[in-house]
Length: 496
Ligand SMILES: [Zn+2]
View 1: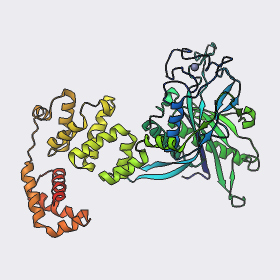
View 2: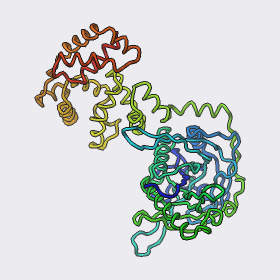
View 3: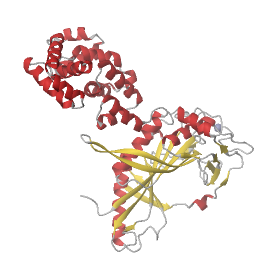
């Protein structure tokens, strides 16, 4: 049942950039080093040190911003955000305040409403993306015996890209779809590995609800904004939004005149995953509380049109363009194009090589989904490490084309387990191809020759016309495998 309110969500995503070194010093930027080993006078904020900007960090950030369709500022500067915290030895963070390097973009996302029907596209606005340095990490004693809190400053000064969306998401699913698309995009671009477990992707959700009311000037009443922090998985993002929206609606019902966005400051809340609750913590600091001022130790960055073009040229094909191409070039359904794209470029390359080897995109997609996906999951492997490369898999499919589904699966498993070739695997399993493909092909050629009108219709774009010819072949060759006849027919029709 639909809720009596509309959820409004904007997301702030922080990602760590895949640079070799930190944003303003030469310390190694790598997860998992021993505590406080990757530090130097610059990132420790010792007196007399000066920061120098990492060009590669700026380049990666620009690549991400361009992929998010943002405008790149030709002039951008650095600002100090002042606050005191144990994991921030300088007592300020170098960030970007009023002149971020990019702004006003958008990201097209796909909401998985129904796998059978594909997805629903939606455009999410991007307010800005800016660069800043990360803080260190406080390590609290979790034994429950009240031990010390320690601080690890390895993360201090590592490059962070903050991407701020418009409040354009209206369901938990939309928020998750947005995060999935951001993660896919940044991984494909080599900008970040986006590992939420390692903190290289972090997300805060700004949530409020609109309650329809005919007598309001805007037609609805809006609840105060709450920024939810400590979201450590996409699933908790979804759960936290659902919980918080309901909580705000309940607060509104208790005090419809007072619990309003115009009457209360924005607050922050933590998400307690085991309890499944948000805990409102404090009023959010206003920008003025941070006493932003321009960073005097760094020169502003001037970006030329040629530099923007150079970064654009190294982006490669973006996921949204790839989805469209897989549909037009290989005839994949929107759903299949989405599934393959979501699995990354390596899987798409594998698919394209198999599709070319078989000369049939749809069949390649189906066979990879039936055979390769489950095998990879079971073997806990990436496609790059899968023992059957695309060429071998295409050959396997050709050799086992006439087999019933179960026999093909048995042979596939045997090849994977033993590393033997297909013929040996078939012999070992006592399976043989009883279908004479040459004979079937002759039957297909004869049926095509006997139906010139149907072929003309087919060539004119009536693809269903081919079913008539297929029907005749199947009738005359009882027990012939449907998929083999289909493939032969498509091959032969392609030659007419
Ligand atoms: Zn350093």
